[in-house]
Image 1 (cartoon, rainbow, N blue to C red):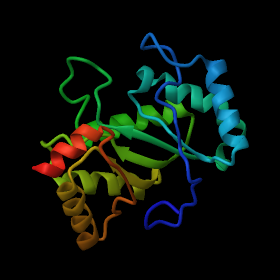
Image 2 (cartoon, helix red, strand yellow):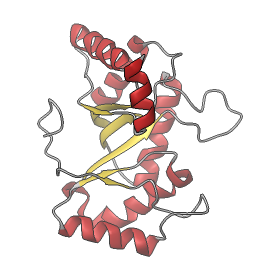
Image 3 (cartoon, rainbow, N blue to C red):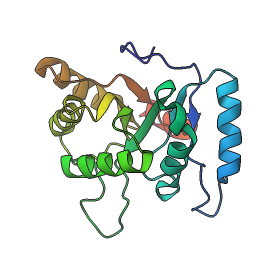
Image 4 (tube, helix red, strand yellow):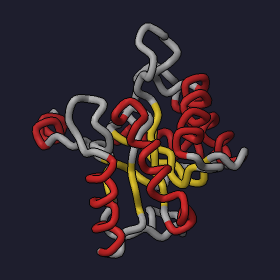
Length: 190
């Protein structure tokens, strides 16, 4: 299961950051489909993407590839990173960016709800209370089922979940730790 939730996910998640060639590298639609087919054949049901991955193409490709069997998959996406350069409210963890990011991801993914929404990175500007309340509102509206956080200090995750638990809001069920071994080593030494 995913964290403390009852959501059943395969032991390995298919990361779809490279689905699409918009960044000058990555997988074509055909290559993405082949990867997904191999993943499904191995028993996978958990797909991870983000609004920013290949400028939104990753979400669109996933939408097309799973459309006929959507309910079979646990679809995770992320928000935080900017999709519009020069717009100060098109990035960050605040409510405005959350709402516009979720709405845009739902359209690109062709979904009515997101199984798991990740906070992509902690912005060190938005208060944990605002983030958790806004995320809980997305859950209560039925647009998101479960919450996760990525690339955030442990104290932020602990504080955010404590606030959520105390106020009866939806807590984070999943955590993606810093992917850089060097960063994790440096943080540990501090």
